[in-house]
Amino acid sequence: MSMVEGRSSTGLTAQELGAWRGMLEAHARVTQQLDAQMQREHGLSVSAYEVLMFLADAPGRRLRMSEIARRVLLSRSGCTRLVDRLAELGYVTRAAANGDGRGLYAQLTEAGLRKLTAARVTHHEGLRRFFLDQLTTTDQVVLGDIWRRFRAGEKGDPGGEAELAA
Image (cartoon, rainbow, N blue to C red; front, top):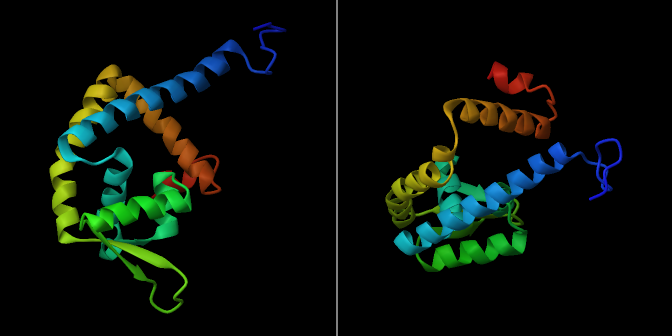
């Protein structure tokens, strides 16, 4: 990497590249470790667990498929395949949206809620083991503040004032 005034040929400093690459590597490693643990102990991928979690937290335990895809960071077709697998296992049902008929909802079943409840302890233990135990309390506070700014920026509030007021 050739450096000109502290910047690489990509226009980013070593510090900037380190921050970006570090976030990507940490996310990939933690997700792989957590996914393997969740598959081994519960037969669920992290994405499947997240679908169940988001549904459990939603009003009426249901969400539009497009909203699930957005939250779980999947394409619509990837989300459809995942929800179809969860439906085959009896963890969710799918239904057309009332009124417009164009949208589809997924709804958590009682079996899905039981599966989520059983997997939640493992998921939280994995988060602690693979991620949180690598951070000091100060690191956790700083990262929480950083992610809050990112979420606020997505909502058109780059300063994060809206979330702080909530």
